[in-house]
Structures are given as structure tokens and as C-alpha cells.
Length: 461
Image 1 (cartoon, rainbow, N blue to C red):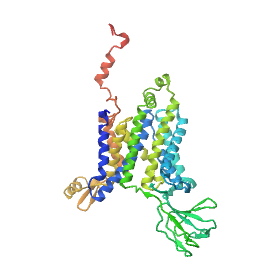
Image 2: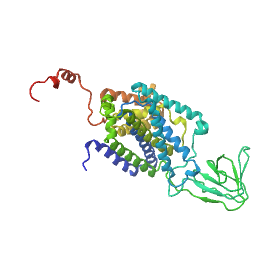
Image 3: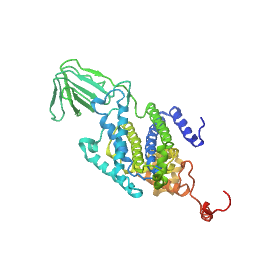
Image 4: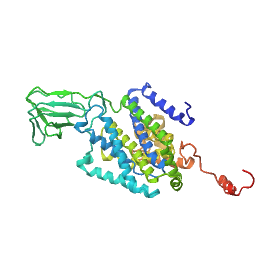
């Protein structure tokens, strides 16, 4: 099979990604590389998903973070349920998160089918902000500002959580005067993070660790057991079933799992771009009137684009939740949408290769700026003498050395400066879609205006 020259860069990046975890760096450097790489992989998914709408249909989406948030909360809520603790439940939750976001993408898109340009961008921004306010204030569903931290991780070769079977007659004393729970028919203790070290003694109250839940067998009630709760079992019938092997978020296994997901997503997007649906989207972007005249249903294909974009964003949001092991509203502000949009603009709107490369450049640069780069003591005097006004803005003193580092929110100023330079010197992006070129120069425009059209040409064709 002949490989297009356009994809050689992505193949080279894939080769580097496969080899990177095995390069013999020091242990801290290796862990940091894997951690940053997993962040990049997840944002590549976000960029691929967002690229469907502004890149292929021409509609500006400023609220893509809403799908990221919906996907993360969907996984966090579902993965805590006692009937979803079987083997492979994490994959089911990932798919559910994607489908949930696809549904919301269609629902959000249906009332906006007649909107274009700035009007559509404002509606998407408003949708994300309204959803964020809802998440921050709807405690019974989203746990408000606390969010969720008690959902299990990806486990292979077993069910998702550790489960302790309490014999009939067991009691639980809730801390801080919360009363006593009695289980005449028995109950289950569910440990999202394990629990193999908790071994109660019959007849003696035993304190359990945090993040433990109680599943009442007879009444099908699901309770959180606060820290400090004490469990008393009457007999030695307590048994514990260990969960499957945990895939740690910063491990090589999780790294290669995310890399495989990215490869599948890229291949799926390539296939979708070259399909009838992808050609319909590109026709709509070029000229909706002409597309409609050629039999393309604008509402149908728009809603399909919103659903596909939402599905990819939801799966990415769920994977991000599994990586950071916490879901809170503060992680999904407007700047996440800005960063994802900046990635695809830098790479080239509508370009799959550009979405990948733009994300690798911006997200990696953002992590470097956030963590800082230490320069040798020889440059310390230069920064102190020539650039003292940038101290704690672009650099910080680190003993005899200097650390190039910017505050977290100031990273977006650097991203903005990069995008301005790109718009000036390469407005089509780093890797624009095939067939696109730089805008016409003034000389080319004059030649086009002076050329006679085919209707008035003389002579044989």
C-alpha cells in the first residue's frame, strides 16, 4: 500500500511515541514524559472531535468544553454504581459517555440549525456556561463543587472494585452522630480503590478507610460511608473479593492504551473525511446553497456533525477523568475550549494532521511553561540585570540559577502571541488540508480580474 507523503510526519510521531517510554532517562524524567504525553493524547482526541464542526462544516464552536465535562461526569456517576462493578465495566462507561455527549450534541444542534457565524458561536458559548453553572449548583446529581473522586480506575482481569461480603447481623456506626445501620440480610462493602488490607475481627468494631460504600442487599440502597465509620461483624464469615489489576494513570500501560485510542480515532477520522458524509460536510462548508441544490440535507448532516464531534469529546472527557481520578467543575472552564480551538487553528482548520501536530506543539509547550525550564547560573546575572521587570512573570529565581516559567493563566498569553504570528506568516496553519494554499497575492488577483471568462473566449476550446 502506497503511503501518502502527507502522513509521513504523523508516522514519524507515532514511531517516537512508541519508543519514548523505553528511552533510558532517569526515573523522574521518564515519569514526567509519560504524564505529559498522556495529557497530549487526550487533547489530541479533543482536537479531532472539535475539528469536525469548525474544520469540516465551517461553524465556530466556542463551547466544546461542555462535551468534555458531560463525558467526565457521565463516567464518574455511572462507574460508581454497584451494578457496574463487573469486568470491563470501564469500557461500557466510556461508550456511554460518548453516546451521552453525542445525544447532547444533537440536542444542542437542533435549535441552532438556522444559525451561522457569530450567532452560532455565541449559542455554543452560552450552552457551555449554562451547563457549568448547573454542574456547580446541582448537588444531588453532580455533587456540586466537590465533584467525584470515588470512582474506580481501569482494571483488567477482574471486576472494578474490591467487594467485602458482610454476614447477616452486621452493624455500621456512622461517624459524627449519624446513627447505626443494621443489616439483617447482609450487605456489601465496596472499595473503589481496593480494600484488601481491611480485615475486621469478629465482634470488635473496626474502622474502615475513606471512599467506602455500603450496598444493602435486601433493600437495594446505596450509601456512602463517611470517614470514621465503624463496622462490627458478628461472625467470621466476612469474605473479600479482590478487583482486577489496576492500570495506573501514569503507567506505561495507560500510556499505550491512550496511544492506541488516538490511533483508532485518527484512522476513523480519515475514513470519515473521505466518506460520503465527509464530502457532504466539506460541500456545506464551501457553499451551503450549492450543497443543498445538489441534494445534501443541511439539517441532517449538521446534526450528524454535532453528534460525531460530541461523541469524540465525551470519550476524551471520560478518559481525562480516569487519568486525573477527580471530576470537579473547576476543571472545565471556558479556557479549555480556547486551548482546543487554538490547537486546530495552529495546525490548520479542517486538517487531521494539523489537529494532531498543533495539539502536540501547544499542549507540550503549555506543560513546559507551567513546569518551567531551569537555566544555568551563567545566565542568572543577565536576567537579573536586563530583565528584572519580567521576574515572576516570565522567569523566577531558583538559587543561583534561573527558571523560565510563567503563571498558569499567563500561558494563554503565549498561545495568543503564537497564533498572531501564525495568522501573519502562515494564515492557513502549519499543516493545512490537502488542496488548500496560501491566499492569492495582489498580482494574482489582478491577473484573475483581467482574464476573459470562458463565456467570451474566441476560437476552439
